[in-house]
Image (cartoon, rainbow, N blue to C red; front, top):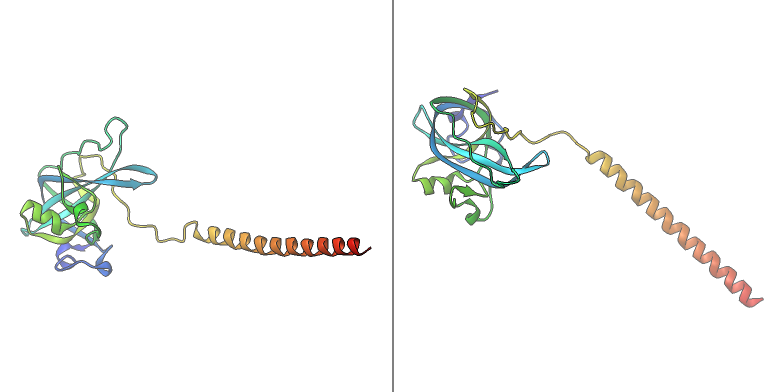
Length: 195
């Protein structure tokens, strides 16, 4: 169930704290960051992260969604935030891990989302982790595609596993057939040489 963000995002966000649905109400600050080198459903582009100042006075990061790459503008233009008060609902995510250089903003662009690094660059005390937006009231004006949670189904993995097991069986049988044929040919060659 959807919970107020404060019930989940009160402390450090770890792996076990991810994917809870939370809601927060507040106004966006004008600063935004473009998270480069992202993909969604086979399309390449970036994600847009904004800072929401909540009614309770907290500052938290909101991943507004995916911005598909355009041919003439590989990074695309970052759409403006929704003005006025908004209520956002989304999934709690932990800070992304990796090289600290990838988390430091350069001309409004980053490669990994880290509330700690972005908070230092903005001079704000951001709550740990971020919210991956799934719904906004009023609707987000940027035309961004919300990043969905991961698919928890088996997907095509079972068919791939069966395919590789079949290849293995064919390979083992094929090696046996080839070895047997080689032995038979050597016996025939030996018998012919003896005769």
